[in-house]
Amino acid sequence: MSLTFARSDASPAMLAFARAVGTTDPVRVVGGRTQWGVGRSSEPQAREVAAPSGIISLEPAELIVRCGAGTPWGELDTALQAEGMLCPIDGPSESSTLGGIFSVGHSGFRRLRYGHLRDLLLEARYVNAAGELVKAGAPVVKNVTGYDLCRLLVGSVGTLGLLGEVVLRCRPRPQVQQWLRSATVDPFLVRERLYQPSFIGWNGRETYVCMEGSPVEIRSDTKTLNDLTADWVETQKPFIPSAGRVSKRPRELRSASRDFAEGSWLAEIGVGVVHLQSPPGPGSQRPAGPDNATAALNRKTKRAYDPTGRLNPGVMP
Amino acid sequence: MGIATRIAVRLVPNPPAIRTLLADFTSIRDASNAVTAVIAAGMLPAALEMMDANCIKAVENWAKAGLPLDAGAVLLVEIEGSIDGADADATEITGICKSNGARNVRLAAGAEERALLWKARKSAFGAIANLKPNYYLHDAVVPRTRLTEIMEQVLEIAERNQLMVLNVFHAGDGNLHPLLVFDKREPGVMDRVHRAGTEIIEACVAVGGMLSGEHGIGLEKRDYMHLVFSETDLAEQAVLRNVWDPEGRWNPTKVLPTGVRCGELQHVPEGAWI
Image 1 (tube, each protein chain N blue to C red):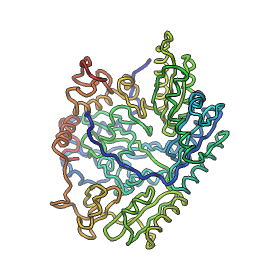
Image 2: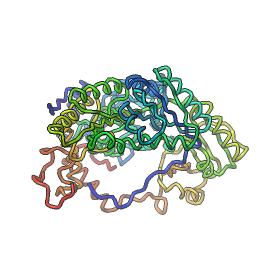
Image 3: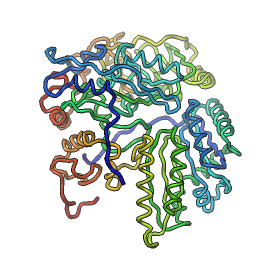
């Protein structure tokens, strides 16, 4: 029986990325610069590197896609659309790169239906602090082989390793996307009654609902909504503020009208995320940091993966 | 890495409608092709489970669920959604199964029939006792488009090693569960079981698969980790483990192969439960 693994599958682009990252000096990885301030800015004197860009393989029969982490989200979405596929990443901007989106780890507006961003990352190839190419995960949709380093990387803001190539889980693209708005409905009742809505947004005055699926499914959902209230109007995706985010237990959103200034927020009902027009200030709305034990584990993890602190110096997850 | 003492999980609402189909095929090949075709058509049923002929016979003998005893394989398909949506999907999947050679596709008439079909599926492992006293289970996962060829290889490997194999598995996820069925009192049989198991793992890895879809690595698959990860990959996993468990107290020797971790334990401490 042969138990020898040979790494013969590293692409020239990944080898070049590893060479660019090198082994000693501080580097900061640059994508679309659309979420540059998350986790504080990295030290500007660090040398800039960029992950490979472009779609490597798109497999409709497997519902997966492999691409360079430097690929802009908009480019991927357009390619997936042409194949009837969807990867519900919903990056903050079309020019946001996949590497940036996964490194920051903020899920898109359709998390209620499709789950957290981390569930989409099936395989990650990255460059570690020693400049080595590492593979985590695999291009299969169900996998518990060893420690799941993909999940460690999502949200680590490029402080543990620099994403170079990703394999993402996709879904069939819904035939219809329908947005409705109501000024009278109880958004929590919508959450209770509607099966698998993609988004329920509430700003204290209006409720926005996004439904996706076949025409048959959308008709069924619309009937459910009409049974709740009569003032639904077709609408577009609402503006989602991005200056700050607060995460609450879903039921705590009932008091959002009292907790946040009018007109300054939009809450994802059923998820618990509140999007704010300005960063949360001091007081009850400032998000709690990790407890001491978790913070100590975070520091130990960073030191273990990046002993000299050369990956995205200055950035904190 | 630690012992969970409290967990929070996300719950989802019950679906308004559930439809359960039993599709009857004359061969595993046709059933595997149907699975691939369902996924390729953009359908994602809540469950897409396969049982092969040996499994059907073992299960039906006990569960009396009306499984076709002359089938080469059956697919148990569960669809969740709105009432209209689930009905539309059931119709489409029935069509895909038929165009891939299904002799018959049965829609469970109600909750009782649905429960009976699932009882048959879930009792597969216990029903093996009707055939032989022992079984050895693998849990490899393969890309879904490679299902047909890997199933043929699994059957060929079992035959070559003179072993009976039952296949009951999560076909929609590409997650195989070949059950090698045997009587360990038979001289030399364990060697053949282990050889066949290794060959199945290697065949799955060769088509881009992984070692485990849901059962984990533990001790038994630990020494196969080199098949799918390089030394660097494994060292990166060991870094994480050492952060959480620097003294190697938690389930020592599990998951990572020997030689990967620093400060590795050379023996299992007395009383350790592994």
